[in-house]
Length: 411
Image 1 (cartoon, helix red, strand yellow):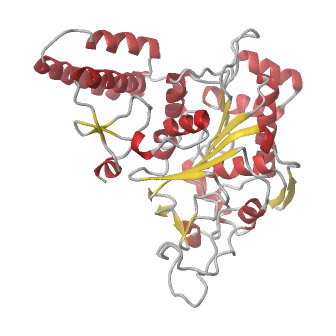
Image 2 (cartoon, rainbow, N blue to C red; image 1 turned 90 degrees about the vertical axis):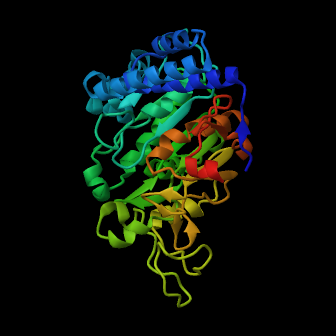
Image 3 (cartoon, rainbow, N blue to C red; image 1 turned 60 degrees about the horizontal axis):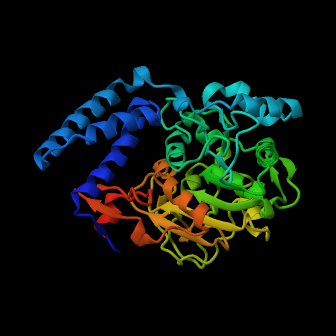
């Protein structure tokens, strides 16, 4: 895989500025304008290579100091939520309860999106984000309940506004009870209505969908329509929304179940009816386990969750363009994201996928955001040789705004 080198000091400084801009924003939870002014002024000072190194050292010390104080000064969700009042009032006028319940029940970190006023224009296809099991629309401060806050920073850097970025919360936002999460038809119908809401509110001909983990399952069911039995209820979403969704991206999805569910079959989230049950056999008399079966080894692997099977067997397409992003080091889905030797994160009949290295299940939300933006704009995933930039041991690609792990870099 090609690694791009940038020996020119001016280019390196430009890249450093972009990287520190994001770090400032993440550490201080300050506005982009504040961080840009602070860091770009810092780098504008002339100096020798030794002086530049000293600048970086001082800035690093300052940044880590800010990170140490972050807990005391941060703003929940980075101030991205809740809904803008313009969108909230629009929903109220139409009595759209599911999105309003998220607004009312989860506070400032439970929702985001909306125009500042009637006159605000929309120049990009709106993006709707659906978080995973026990997560949140935005960062709550609780461990692993950080929502889309970091990812949204990339979108804002690319010129998106909250008139083009939308998300709501479902579930209890408690990772300690994730295994007991019971998906409901209300969640499915609520998200389906939210997609229709955003289409109507923005006047856009299409929207883009991004779903992480369980959110990828919800996104696919919402987009494809059709019916299934969820929590004992016949859940019918009607016709497909294929012509209304430009790009759908699944991030660390489990479309054929999760191997961890073989040991948690009594938990709601691992149900064989409407959870992530992967099945219990490889077939052909092969003695192996869900997690250790090698790719292509198993022959009898179609006895997984009925709900997942209903989605996969539905012939309707999710969107005009469908992509999946997953990690071979996912700590939830397991090594290579394999389930009985089948890549569980790959969507049947998708248009493309990319496997990352070194990213955890939850890191995938944030560290693939730039590639998702590329896919929205280009209807394709970025070429691999444009994902990498090697500079002093730090992986940064300021020019196309993409990141890779150190493990990928070494290849």
